[in-house]
Image 1 (cartoon, one colour):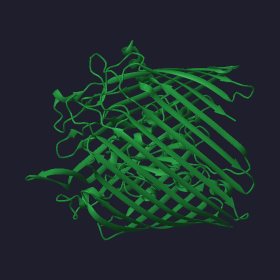
Image 2 (spheres, helix red, strand yellow):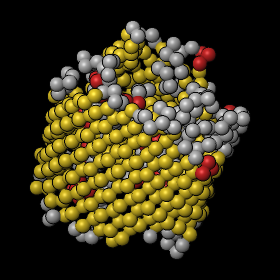
Image 3 (cartoon, one colour):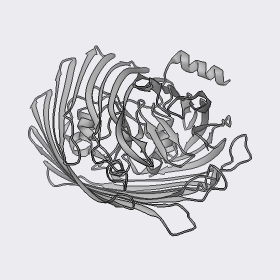
Image 4 (cartoon, one colour):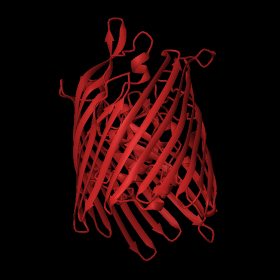
Length: 611
């Protein structure tokens, strides 16, 4: 049966289980006011932007890992369910993928990445995926792509409330409450979420159990907006995350360990609309704290704490109807302290200039960015994109850019090993995308090439390890999506998915990087009749190497996982939704990281109430 389904992947080549929203070339004024991440909408027309549907967010597990793993081309290596989760976007490393919160880069100052299992999707209104280089817009790390978590502040909507509850195998609980009110001049919403699990699943084809894997996390977000007058709007975004998780054993005799983290984000934003000028001022304060306990039975721990203050101002000018010029200045100061890095401080200033113009069926956008700091030499970054529409159904995009990733606090200041002479990683990339849109069918295919220099790796130097600029990596491949929709009276059918072919090689050895599968595919078949909805979901990941010499003895086998779900809407306005899911229905024995086994067949039930 599995071979037949995999053959279907090859026949249809790719499918899309999410909607792709084409962004208009010029923003409307009310959209500028309400959307915090202007760059995502205004200067990303020539690259793929995918916004996941609300239905996907409501029936997905709360972690960002599971949402994206089944609904995107991004590959995740996960140290067991709910454990540390690292993405590989277009064959790059976890540090080369940016996570942006309302337009602000929130990757860790310590290790330069985001653990996707520490992001609870219940606190956000939209999750979007931007493929390809974006350092001109989002700074360090946006080499493979970026993930965007956005909160939308709406006015004149009255009261809007929702409650979400989910319970499943391994005593897994997921709760979310959101309440909001808005009038013509004022808007406020608050969201609270909590996720926890004993996470004590049995390994498939084994008498072993996942030990020391329990976790919980809870988060609160609060967002406010006030229209001072017709030209000025003030917004405030706040987010607080608290989490703790044990780290699963490989062997039962291991010492139990755990990790605690507490993160906060606050941002004040002022939007001004003055004729052809649009002014946006942002002031943000981010904190990041962690404690690692090498033995949970003792009070000893290592720690790290970073505080980041960001000031950002951008001014847009509409030169004429279809042309926009934008200048951006920002300054970021980060102070860090930890058991292994001591005390350190750095300040980064950057200046950007962006331009976009649309001439009938042709659009082009260009951008430059330069950063200034005493910690490293920053290259001049650039991006140039071209788009041409052949009628109403076929669009071609071409984009080229230079991107980078700066050394992290751990790279620069780790006690006894940090290397303050590190250079930023740099990336030159190009891509070409094709988009077909018809009434019932949407198809896209993008080919890409990425040349990454000075990749930072920690290597042994005598009896110690030290980060050095060593690798020269090339990545290339193909990403494609297809979305099919058909309605017949009360019957609605959708079929969708993704397929990615990725080669990521060390140019010196011509060997594939570890934990980068050449093939990844997802698909979803959904049938809806009146109030009932049934779906079947699949994930296929090809084999991966776990050693840099590509030793065939240490390959993780390909795996194929399927889920099935059913939901039913109740109430006069269909405000209640009851649903259930069975995951890994074929009880696949698989792992995305060596010796870190994932659960077999499991279930959950959920209730979603909107009022």
